[in-house]
Length: 179
Image (cartoon, rainbow, N blue to C red):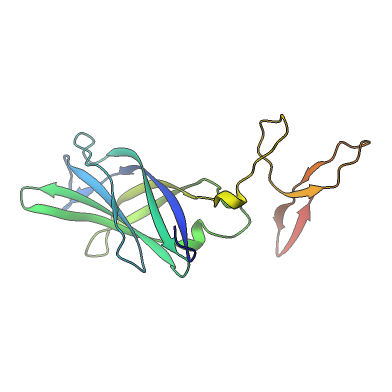
């Protein structure tokens, strides 16, 4: 992984209600994932049995450049006329990068697919996790098997020390943090 990119683990789970020329597809669908800024492409194996409701459950690893704004997920179907695009979804990077969740958080996402005419054509279900670089990965030399998240708190024999974690909670038009 280059210093100016992030590694994403994208699991393509399934799709729903896929159609080609307004008819449910019968078989042979696959998914291609690519970032908006470079030519790296990852593709799933072909689902030969799922028809209009295929399941892949396949993990793809993709380098997302730091300046990328989105990834594109494209469902394709192999027909007697060749490989045809069933539907496409553009997923903003802001849906899984940044915000109030830690790096390494597993996001389960569903997006509406659009065909080449811009009409609705099914739904794609994926999960996305940004891999945390090894230097930032949580590790503990204690006997605890739990990974820790948050800020270290000075250890004190009276209170046992540990980790403090703030969780943002939205109330109307302002934000409070509860500790």
